[in-house]
Image (cartoon, rainbow, N blue to C red; front, side):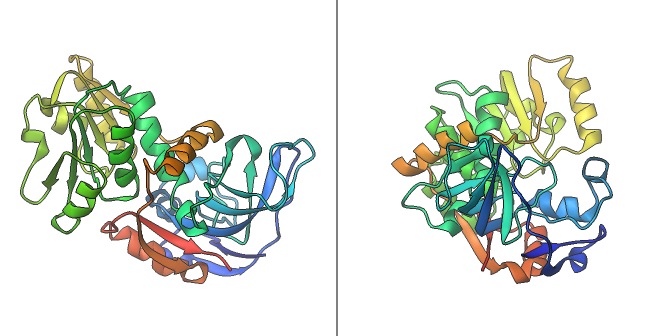
Length: 315
């Protein structure tokens, strides 16, 4: 199969495109003919070696955490999916594997793509939507009527978080973004939109029940005065030093810090599919690149200015 891969950690220049062996599904896996994938910040952090204590030193590595395509083959114990089914999901090997013509998914983490979605739209969803859902429902434990702030509301995760906060019953939802993306964030359902160049949300004293820092640009220590009593701060891109400082500060506060990484989940993705089917959620795509141009897609993602997701199409 053709795949994007790298044989050493480093900048985008280490990415290659060429022939690698097609994987074989194990008993509880499905082999997906990938039609679309994406680039997420975690992908270039893995490529850089920022997570090498987790991802290890075996090469080559295929990046990518979003798979959308058709089932090509199923393992011996798989009964829910059949060849030809349109499916999407997030590989659960902890490294990636999605940016290739074929990828493996455990049958427990895969879901059917809603009928009205293209492969490109489906490829923009799994990691971002699972992250937003788990951040708000499981870690922030969002309650009906909660005031929610999403920092980085126009990004891949943030654009999903604004919509999911409303779907979960959030009250006033505030999105923080740059000046060029304010209309987009309003269209996603945000009740308030703040231009981060003009408004520092951390000065909104005791205003929010939940601060979800989808951009990884703030910290619990900086944000805690903006939280109401028993407020919750959630981040998915934590700086280790900031987390340690935050945990110390939270120990003397009624407010809490939650740092996490999204977990693969077929049941969560099925809920997301139902919302997509109903029109409650919609994917936002900034740009589309062919898989052969993955290095350029990584460079673009690293700039941090994408509105929504960067999608890779796979021939």
